Amino acid sequence: MRMRRTIPVPERYQNILILSVYV
Image (cartoon, rainbow, N blue to C red; front, top):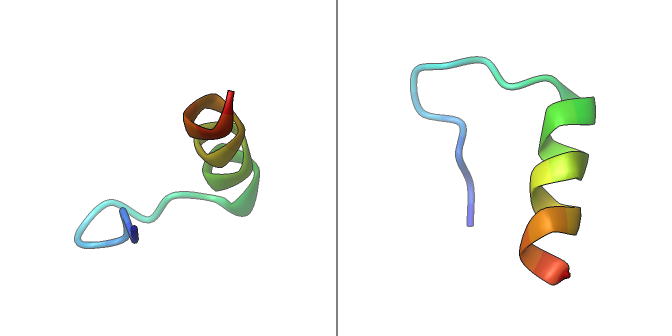
C-alpha cells in the first residue's frame, strides 16, 4: 500500500498512517 503518488508524504506521516491502519 503506497500512498506516494503526487503528494510527498514525509516518513513520519507514513508511520502514523501505517500505525493507524494497523490499529
